[in-house]
Length: 138
Figure (tube, rainbow, N blue to C red):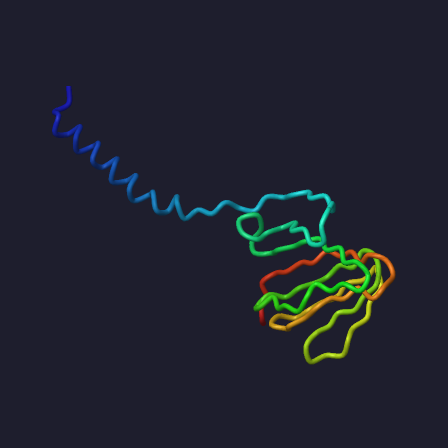
């Protein structure tokens, strides 16, 4: 039989090792997992991907705009954005630029830190998917 003092020492070492390992374990982040998300949206703007922890930083959503409607002026800050136009026609309004008309199917790119808006200029709903991701300036 081992002396009690030795067993307590072993126990103390084991607890110490767990306490040292605990911060490293808590810093382990869950990795994003593959997803399949249907493009079904009852409203005008439906989030699809909402960033961390679902993704590494990308956000995405499905938008349906009625004739004459806009999403409203906004900026995505330091993020870049792409619009995948699925149906309809409209215009991308980007501050300091001429209006950029488009018709589906097409992709519209909006650089970081640009105030912008999207308007439906057609006679049927404009439907698109937006993707916003952190910009990496090289």
